[in-house]
Image 1: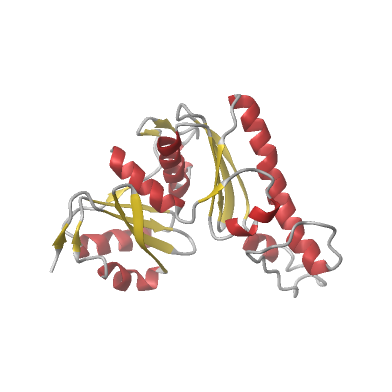
Image 2: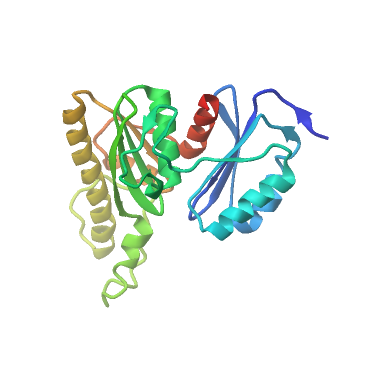
Length: 253
């Protein structure tokens, strides 16, 4: 039996490492589940008992997998899914990329939704497969962004170094405050944390100077919590930022 609910949105964020699904109603996110694409059909079926005003999804995976997601949604729901892709502008927010479609759709969703919900300069840090840092003026103009290797990519970069390749690098959520590492594992792990946090702080300083106003700093992604001990800035951690921003976009289109 399908339950009729007014203005309820189904949201799907299809990422490189995982897919997130959630429900958006009254500006609140609920029923968030995480799966891989192999289990997507099974998990998405558990959301089929509601009637949705909108189904929105964004994707950074291959065309083949993207097609699979779209066809699954069409087969499970009567409402046609809306795919949010990178574009020159959306909801008054402007994309700075010279080729607008080359900006990752997940980044674009975060940029648009965060700009709409804050109305202030926003610095968005997404620590996932890669680390991206995007700067958005309070006018909704995206100035640009930076991309760094994610932690897994960083760890793999030492595979050719004979004395480093077998060291198991793990960043824990309670990562210690950076001091002076006294073993190789800490040196590599804390070296990465310092590299990323110092970059965030440097970009924050430049962005603040250019905007003449302190930006809101948003952290998201699988490794974001591991950086917070060593980040000397006020910030808000958003566990499901892209999903939340999909909901905000849905409220404004």
